[in-house]
Image (tube, rainbow, N blue to C red; front, side, top):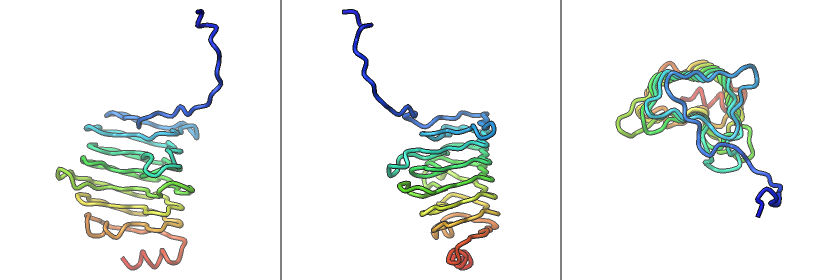
Length: 205
């Protein structure tokens, strides 16, 4: 039989990666204009990856229709990471999350965390681990959080963090209550919030 004469069948499929894109050490991922978009899967920095810059990238459409369907950026066993001027939208689980390993000297600056979604779990940034005495050093500055039904910052044990100049717009929980006791918080500045109740909440902590 001549297989070249086999029948054709039309079909549609998603060609998104099955696994997150692993980023190694000494790498810069920088978007050009508005064309730097990663759709369908996130980035993973693990196994000692260090000296990494992620800038002007929009990570979006990471299985927003599923619960716990993937993270935008995972940091697990990393050092010297700068995430700057990026946008996160339609993310199923966490927009930025640390794993069981250390994440030293991480700066997250000038980013847009857009939680508008009918299905996503609505959590922006989780930093912290209680495994292997791993330490996380984190700086979050001048980030914009909008329409997130869950938390903006969730800071767990073994984490030292400086938060300053962040803007919260229609955020249910700018920072989780446990963050105030589990981690080492320095010079916290909970910036402008548009909802009066959130302003009152921020004043109370």
